[in-house]
Length: 145
Image 1: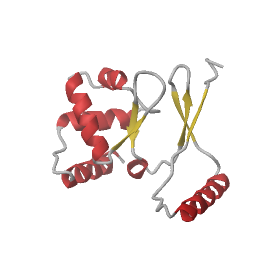
Image 2: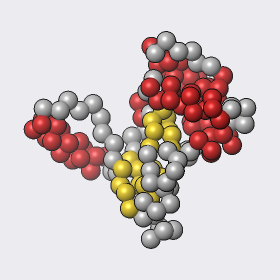
Image 3: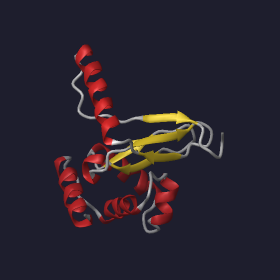
């Protein structure tokens, strides 16, 4: 999957007239190896050769190219993960409103289908052309509850 992931990331960056540099590749590798969304400080720990200013700039470009997705939480750091289109891993997020932690979760396929149907109804009623959906449940994690 890693080689294919890099081919897809490079292609998306080319569509934005950007190159797939070693720093961008390092960020993608770190996100691919992670078991959940990462903050920039966490990414910098995993990519010691990537300067902080470069990480911010490259994550913005990777987000623009739809290689990464930014998750905004209630703490001072956004978290980043690879887009679902690249990983083929559809999931949702539990976001703690106190500490800002983000945990991935999935629902059974039958529930996902019912959810998709309900969202299609909402989109159809409003004339919205939905491409996909994401759900973030905001509350308190077990440690903060």
